[in-house]
Length: 355
DNA sequence: CTGTGAAA
DNA sequence: TTTCACAGG
Image (cartoon, rainbow, N blue to C red; front, side):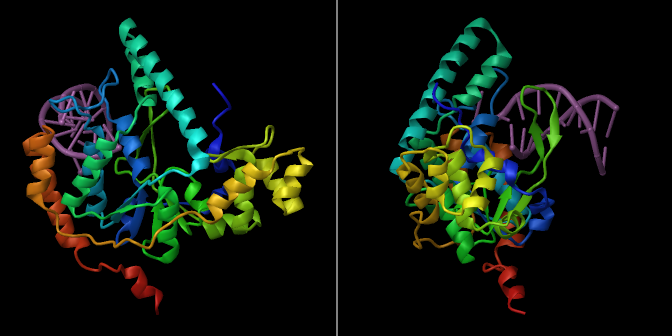
């Protein structure tokens, strides 16, 4: 099934622990965060499922797990005074096509295993493979955008990678931080990354039926670079050496060795040659995507008044959500907007920064 | 993942 | 008030 999907997740191992600051949600009040929408929607899609792994669906068989997650979590964030903006992926860079194909293949295999598990009545297995096979359709993405519009929550269409756009917005100060589970946004130059932005803080341990507590985690790029004693460009070099969504890494090179190499030789091409890599082009091309990603200034972040009727229409009428539940949630949303979101649109951060 | 109502 | 199990669509 191809190469081990190390990806940027391996970056985790060289993030200095001192650079991870845990926050309660309350500490993030008044902050704005640009969230990677696909990242979030996939999480919901994978997590919100019945015992046998089936996602939630309306009476017409359309998947609604992503809407449920998006709706309730966003309201929770707004209730905490956190201004969430979502960033949707645009056209993936050409270099990503191999990675995308690989993922599709994995999902198709997982789907086969899921169906097999269902036939055998293996519920636990079925659930696992159902999660792995989760895929977002175009319609699901459109519905998510419609729901956000109705909720008055801004979303941005990235020209290409959502992570890159979110990072750019954080760089410009349009938002306080970018939010994602991945570390890619640090490579894209986000000065501040927030991970684990959830309400319950419950995270299932892989395989087990146990849960551990997870708090939102803030990582600043400056801290990471200072502690490692490198530049952002060198951090990117490390990433492309171990492998990213846009290139395969060098066999036998992990995060630790990559860090050492980068500090020793400085220049990426020299490092690659010292490792016996003949074709350096794919590495340089991947690096270029992180250094100069395609982003846009064509966005406006406005948290408008939610439209209860539209929300009701989408969730209750169109997708069979429980009327009482939705009405209660809408009330929470309206209250949060009035009391925590409506004013201070520019954010208090700006105000205090200018002391 | 999150809301909910029952149990602790 | 907090914890828990379970359903949600």
